[in-house]
Amino acid sequence: EDQVTQSPEALRLQEGESSSLNCSYTVSGLRGLFWYRQDPGKGPEFLFTLYSAGEEKEKERLKATLTKKESFLHITAPKPEDSATYLCAVRKYSGGGADGLTFGKGTHLIIQP
Amino acid sequence: DTAVSQTPKYLVTQMGNDKSIKCEQNLGHDTMYWYKQDSKKFLKIMFSYNNKELIINETVPNRFSPKSPDKAHLNLHINSLELGDSAVYFCASSPTGGLTEAFFGQGTRLTVV
Image (cartoon, rainbow over all chains, first blue to last red):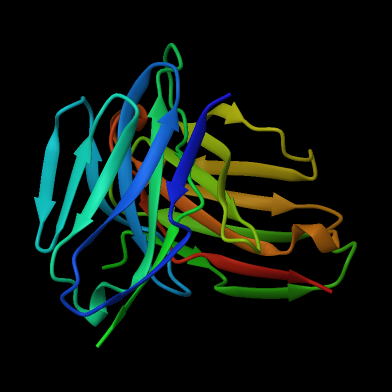
């Protein structure tokens, strides 16, 4: 069975204190690993897609990396507005047609000023 | 312009009632989805539609039925509502048969009393 495990469940950092969030996955035929940000009362907001091991993508203070077993979301010098729940999801090869994302349970990140 | 919009945002109803949630996307995407986020914030795929054809029907009760009048709309009908149906329901869409990222609506918080 496909599994996506995120750690830690919750993380509290001081403003400017860099850290990394982990997403480990077990899926047959990976067709993409996705990172989303979710603010309270809102829908997930797309951040990154990674397709192959070794791939990296950056956006402002965020950098996502991918290996064959896990992905990291690195947060450099975070600000309070980076506080949110970060969700990792995978899409697998299904032999054709559309298939949904399998999500992890998320990491709840709090950045204290 | 809202890319993926859902109505209503909040829905409170009694057990046994039948209700619908509407979803519309103006992105021209091929595929639309319904996800359920439970009280523990775990996001899980329910259905996906590609060009008006149901591609995935996850193990959800048959009281739930998606209906797509056209490519831009995917409504969710729920019959005989139960307490356990209380959750946040998200509509999403993606282009190219689901090969790329999905864009989510703001969610509908359903409370069954």
